[in-house]
Amino acid sequence: MHQQSTQPRRGVSRWLIISAVLASVCLLGIYGGTSLSSRQPTAQTKNFRKKRQRKSATPAQPVVEPTPQAEILQVSANITVDPHREAVLQYIEWLEKGYDRLKSAGHYTATFFKQERLGNDLTEGDVAEIKVRHSPFSVYMKWTEGEPGKELLFVEGANDGKMLVKQVGWKARLLPIVKVDPQCVLAMSQSRYPVTQMGLLALVETLIADRQRDLSSNPAFQCRMFENETCNDRPCVRFVLEYGSPEDSATYRKSDLFIDKEHGVPLEISNYTWPEKDWGDDWGCEEMDDATLIEYYSYCDLRLGVELADLDFDGTNEEYGFRQ
Image (cartoon, rainbow, N blue to C red; front, top):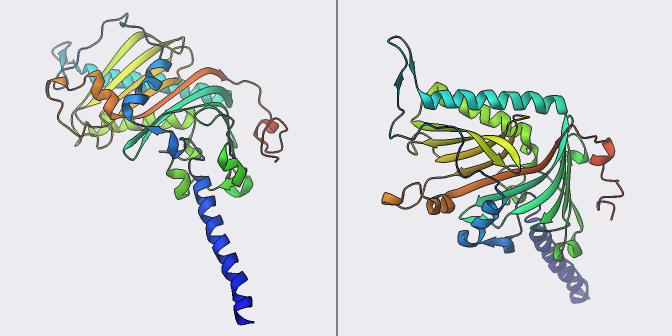
């Protein structure tokens, strides 16, 4: 009798362990990145970023060429102008315009491209159709590349502070719909930032704060502004910011930002870290940028202020897959 009563409990215990492992695996890759199987060597993924960009070959306006240290131009006996600091001031001015535009719009839709380095691997990249509302902060995403058909919904103050994720593929057969804390270890293992920090408004706030810190702390940097550029078929102004050494910026070596001229909002940003090896005379070459890319974000078909209703951020929406 003793053996008959304990054997079922062992089976149940073993099943619970297996279920827990499968659930943990199922949660991996739920937000922002791709599944582990989608990670590829950098050499195979760099074209994801390049094929999305829409850039003019040569800036229409002359730009300040980079120098080993910030070049000081003597304007008069009493006034000196640092062109790199002036470029940063214009950088901030453009983004402050964009911040006001975003706040007044309240919400937007776009096609969102994303590629990040997680650990030592650069993800293959994801493309999603997104809807974003600023108050209460809400995000709906539906993937079209990476994991086509996957959906994510996050609404501040709803669903116990968790995001709803509709899985696809083999994960959908195990747990088709999951609720996940945006800050949990599994969610953050597949994205550099939580969904709570997603979107153009948070990006603009972060960039303005970073550039203001550059002006106040005065690290060694160069900032160049290109007046007439094109990105995602939109007229843009482009800013390329580069730091002098890791002591000036521990994570970021270079940032390449495109700002929409009409609205002042970022359309594309590529961020690069410091190389692990000495590139010698090839420092700053295209191949080094490919090897050190850590973040690439791009917004296409951006529609500011487009009509969105509460139903666009409701899990019961019949057009979404969260009702299963």
